[in-house]
Length: 101
Image (cartoon, rainbow, N blue to C red):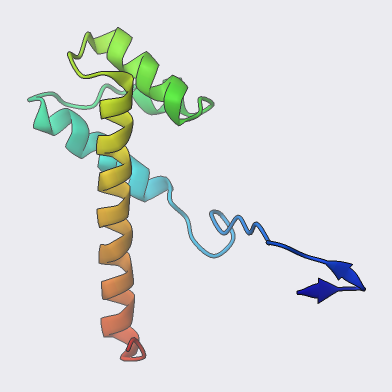
């Protein structure tokens, strides 16, 4: 594809915060993650990881709570939960609009 006579191989679009707000989704993922382990999410947890990327947040979580899972396993669990949550949002929106095919 060409834009202004420049060849474009790909476009990165960050829709989070523009078309989609994932904060509530990630908060629910955190709640479910701790609930699965018989814990309540600590009040300071969200603030503690907010500035961290996914890998550092998983490392912080593993170290702080001494979880047996590897950092990679924690990340996979979070990513799987995010994919599931996003699919639920898509299904909900499609059912509301009747436009999904």
